[in-house]
Figure 1 (cartoon, rainbow, N blue to C red):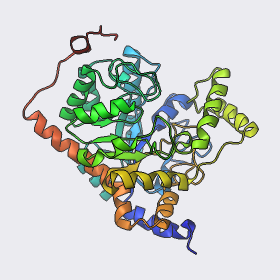
Figure 2 (figure 1 turned 180 degrees about the horizontal axis):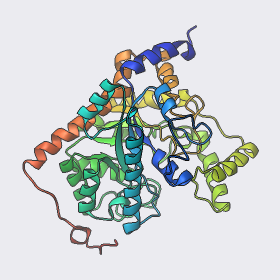
Figure 3 (figure 1 turned 120 degrees about the horizontal axis):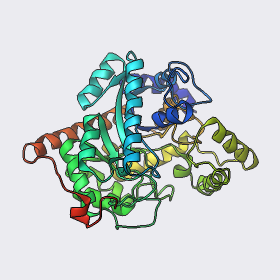
Figure 4 (figure 1 turned 90 degrees about the vertical axis):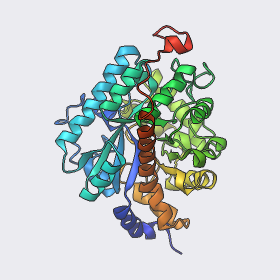
Amino acid sequence: MTSPTDLLPRALDLLAAHPVVDGHNDLPWALRQHVRYDLDRLDIAGDQTGRLHTDLPRLRAGGVGAQFWSVYVRSDFAGDEAVSATLEQIDAVDQLLTRYPADLARALTAEDMEIARGEGRIASLMGAEGGHSINNSLATLRALYALGVRYMTLTHNDNIAWADSATDEPRVGGLSPFGREVVREMNRLGMLVDLSHVAATTMRDALEATVAPVIFSHSSARAVCDHPRNVPDDVLAQLPANGGVAMATFVPKFILPAAVDWTRAADENMRAHGLHPLETTPEAMKIHEAFEAANPRPAATAATVADHLDHMREVAGIDHIGIGGDFDGTAFTPSGLDDVAGYPNLVAELLHRGWSDADLAKLTWQNAVRVLRAAEDVARDLQSVRGPSNATIDGLDGLDEEG
């Protein structure tokens, strides 16, 4: 009987023609944590296994053709500190593009993605992870777009003044009036509205407010793993009408029910050692590894991710799903998807389940390119009828600027 391993050569051939567009990779933050962006000390031109999930040789081995690099900053950064740190993250991506021009190509549009693929380079886009990065300022949102940011996740793990997070107590009940204005301005710019991390109420409000397709840059199916970071079926079912794409993540605590409680305990152990649960520095990983040795971790696999993709395909349709691994943003990864070289294992698993080459081409490349192109088309139309919004959170929500 054929196994997924037997299908790896076919998976590699498919990825050569239709490479992966990955919706979310936290390499910039990992570089900040490890070496404060000193690329001489952490050169991704060589194999960085054991230090990072991501380097150029493994991106090539994994069949990655385009990457949304997250310019994430932690949600306990606030105000101007969050804006400055986001700018430093953008600068880190710029440094990568300057240092590795033979491998990485700056991409601002869907056409740029196609050109990079034709050149054999990895199209590099940016996504800001959390509305705290704009400090309640539409002008700052526009500045991020001008610097190359092509999506913004409306929240990270904590609420912001104008949007509720999936992992915080409800505050505004979804999006505030200013939050809806943020969505409208993102539509006008051509910046994708990313609904990973947000509360289900925020997802529904954003889908109501947007006139452009949305994305979930790294979220899986809540019906398969009941975690608030995942997407409920009623929201997945709205994607065909919206045109958006939900990109399945690989983070074990979001995809494997048995890993949810284990990860909660691991996070508490990190806090007990005075470290942020999301840290992946060598010091942090030693603490994680000691905890795992004493408390064996429930193991997710490529098949676990495939279970989510099967369900997401059933509910949203093949045109509305993608991949967003969250590499270098998580301490733990599934077996077979240990790093960015692992995508062929997922493709082979899906081939084993009967997915066609045409289905997989949509999953890996075509859907993500289409959604960015559609956002560009909407922006072109909107810009012909209205200019930049100068609305303020004070004016729309009745809050002071610190909100």
